[in-house]
Length: 160
Image (tube, rainbow, N blue to C red; front, side, top):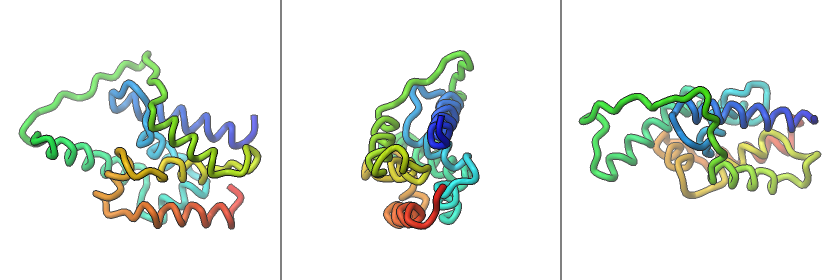
């Protein structure tokens, strides 16, 4: 397996772990974003860090997005004592639709598999106007378009 194959595998496994931790049936794009942030030593990780987005900051943004989405439906998270998500360590989360789309967008951003790098996967996660990731980043005050530009710039200047 090539370095990118190992990276994709690691990110997918970490994304599954994030989904399991959330009690989610599927690993979605926001789980991939958490996984990319947790995988040090790549340009994608550096791009996120340059915006102050380490794993903890992304988790906080996702928690704010969850609370905001509930409030849009008239539900106050503070008014309820929600139980912790049920976690089954034996259950493997599926690959969610937003993850599949993020991977497709990331692969499409590269000219071919041999040119595929971690920043392409980050671009795939960021390159959407709808969903949890853009809402969470907006609520955190992060300019998603500027983050995408930084990721694209790293592709031109950095190898990994």
